[in-house]
Length: 140
Image 1 (cartoon, rainbow, N blue to C red):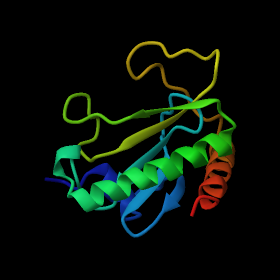
Image 2: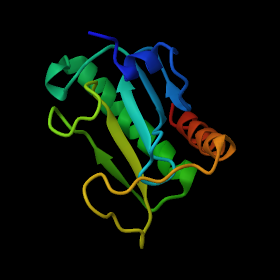
Image 3: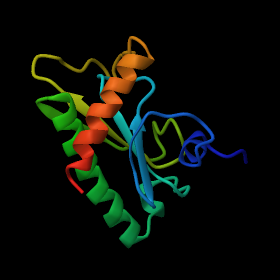
């Protein structure tokens, strides 16, 4: 089986706008965000579903999900957060990932995995990456 796209990102084989990285996990901006600042958190090692985690590793991703969510909230100034994880059904990439999606009052969701948006350009994407990465750093 060919290496998955998230494994390639974790190994720096594919460019991603990284907002956080440590020994076990990496978080980066979603290329087709639901709302700007939409971030994905993945384990660096290939783990397909929640059911494939060891208990210790699962505790680690829970801690990092909280850290990244705090960074997204503070970095974007959003009102709240939507956290999503699909397992097997609707899992677009067969590598465990948590969607950390900023929410603002008055901006409703429409349909499942909602119409996506785009960054205006790489500069805007980099601005979001910098704000979130800086805010995540505060929670170390």
